[in-house]
Image 1 (tube, rainbow, N blue to C red):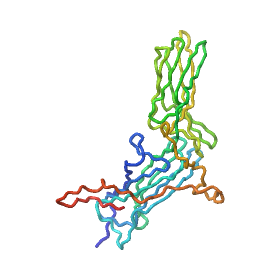
Image 2 (image 1 turned 45 degrees about the vertical axis):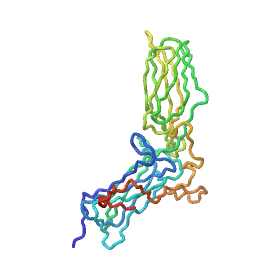
Image 3 (image 1 turned 135 degrees about the vertical axis):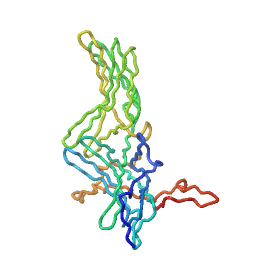
Length: 343
């Protein structure tokens, strides 16, 4: 009898369950201390001989210009291993469940731009005889805990240029993605329009290079001496952070009031620092939360003599089973199982 032959129709994928984390634009998001569960789906058109199925969770940050790369962690769990003489996987499909808990550590957020990348990723490896392997990858969206708060008293700025007083008042400088940034504008005489722009300032700490771009903008016509103006913040904004070893991100709101004249325009401007957080007003992160820079790097051999503790890594936990995931049972017959579930 011939051994089973691996077919290209073999499918390997990673699925994250929606019961864990929160969502940004329908994408699951996890933070420090988060527990998340999923499974590796293996679909076969015919039998396959395999040695083991491994799941690797790793994360790193890197810069493209300076060719810098640091791996935060890399940990793996064997979800299935051949314990028979033939190592045959013969069912049409399998599900291998896993549960992972993130350490209570503040890493940089998942992000990708022209200068910097911070990525968290799951990789499943189906190891086959003779050193062959089938792989599947799944990005994990990670966000740190960035607190926000309202101002105790409203902040009012004034510009008295051109013998005219213009004031701009806000009640908050901290927001979360998807919020509406609101301010009140007062103008002593007739104006034409006001523009609002939110700038993201990314700073590469190696070389102190700054990159600025507009991430949100709005224009309002002015009809009254007192006008409320708003700016919708995108759902996918990268949070503000300054603790990164390589990258930091900050935001600035620019408000420009313009009055067009017969010969030239007159302008009044206001600039305010804005914090984009991930926790709503009044929500506080754990006191035990620590920055990743407070730890010794896992893969840095030069820091072996450091007194700093070693950076904690994500922990694989025993898979959590749910009753709702079982097939529906009917009293007159046994349930039909189309999938083999491996805990």
